[in-house]
Image (cartoon, rainbow, N blue to C red; front, side, top):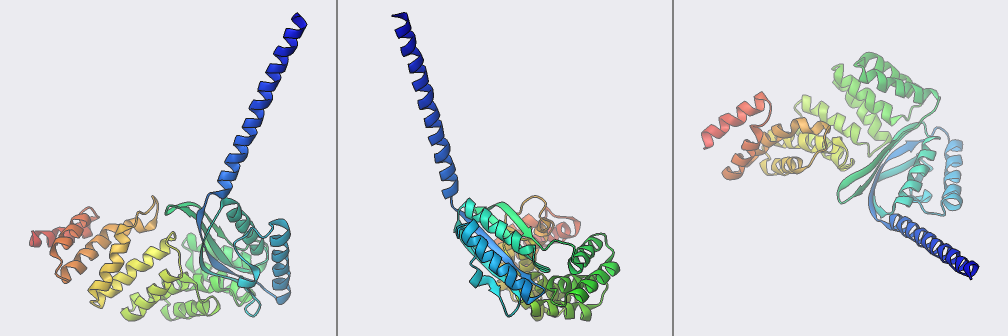
Length: 340
């Protein structure tokens, strides 16, 4: 009798343990499925350049094969939409998708795979939800090819403030690969620092000729025109810079702000107000370089409002501006004294 009770007790314990394990497995499976099905907003933009037709065709075929076999077509980018045989590039104008985390990860792996065959370019990728950035990737070519090494050396030298040496490194990258749009762009910025404005414009135009949607090259052109007080041309250049960039990139907001300042110079007050209003409403993350220009933009917004006779709104803008550094604070305070 005792043995029988012991048998039923052990069986009961076993059954409860088994049932608990199965429930746990079902819970984990459900959580994993929910995570996979969760929808995110994905923003992609960029371009990769390949050195030869053979290299281009090789990576294109491998991309298709990997997409079909390895990822079962669970990727965002179709080969036929982005591989450009005539230009020998993978072209990705700004594109927005809604998808899940698994497809995002598959797409990033595929872009990293392509980058291994490219000689120049970059792709920017953002995973967002509810307007907030969750993940970001900047995917660039890596390797020991001369053009890549020279370009990387140029970036390092530029960050160290060695503009002349950076200029030489970018020139070497262009010499090794004449379609190096990014090297032309970066050399253009070194030419601005070296006060060679005509050379800078030449480099930015060369970059745009290779990569027509390159926001950095348009922004550089805008800076040159700004320095030369060519307000109309600067306005158009900054417009293209923010059109071809992504709102999660600092350059997008820099371009909108500077476009507004050019419109102020042209006394196109309503248009300038629009650009400044967008800028001041943006919630910049800590460390974003645009933060330092926030109070200055409040001041400019106040001026544009005042010029349109919107006194009450202008006062509110100037009150925001007095929290800035000394020059901005002083000017905003002087204007407020006259208005209040």
